[in-house]
Length: 146
Image (cartoon, one colour):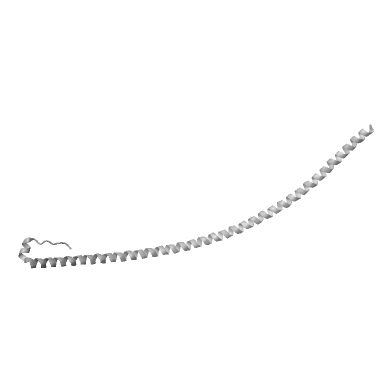
């Protein structure tokens, strides 16, 4: 509460009792004015608070809707990726199967080629040794005749 000083001339005209009554009236007016100002400020604050609360709820609802939309889009994208992954897996299995068959074919061809090379080696070894035996026999016969 503020202290009110009443000028001397007014105190003399009103007397002490009148001055006290005037001060009391002014205090009540100030108190009512403060109460009214506080009530008005409080009402404004409450209205602003309610408006802000309403705006926040609306924003939260919008965010929730966007989140649900993003969630459904992500589920769709994940589903597409899963399908594509399954497709790639099956393609890889097919490719691996083809490679396995190709390896088996090459393996059998190599076995056949190795067997053919062995047969050729044995044939040429026989021809070489037969030639050696004939040559050594010829040389022995030539030495023995002399």
